[in-house]
Length: 265
Image (cartoon, rainbow, N blue to C red; front, side, top):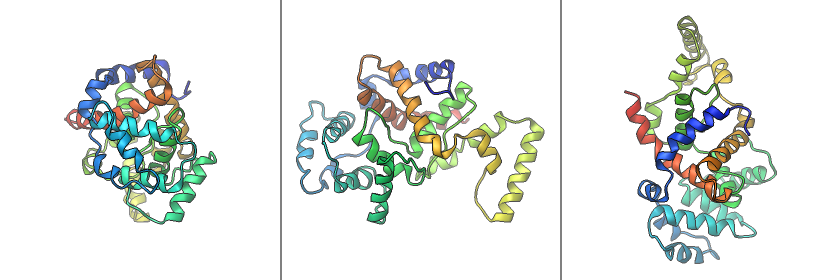
């Protein structure tokens, strides 16, 4: 059990997510594109496209579960396939090949450097679904909002995202206000503005505040997977962790952000 989140917090999150946990509801909500990416499979893995397309149900949710199950069953995940997961399926623009391989190898060795976590966590989640889930900006945005509503004291640091709506609806200022007195808020805002002017940074929260509210970068991935495991056990007690944790991740990715935008009113 994660020491950061007590049973009350876990129950509150599970209760909210329970509204969307059924495969039927997830199938209607999860819409991450998959068809075109399947056509770009690296050499030697073209058979995966046929496997996925032959899934009993043709919706994107079922196809994605099939894809992740098939890839997890591959004994040795070659770098070309890992790169396909990150760049083609994951939609993260290709950068230096050697750099991507290095960060994946580093994660495989157990060194979960927060740098490029949205990339290497995709590899880890596909290869080891019984242990890990994808850690990206959209999932963390959703999870942090649920934690905020549940009264949590700690939150997950977010990797940089590409969603302009999430950037606009930056809930971190609410975390800021919730955990400080009015005078404390004024002082922290003043300190933050002064620090930005001196450093020329675009940060909207001071490092001091971030340290109080957010889990340390070095611990974020471990704590994230512990929390998702607890939620998976609550929501899908009869399913294997390799499937249930993946469903929780997909649920957070596909369901919560649209709900959050209405709750900022």
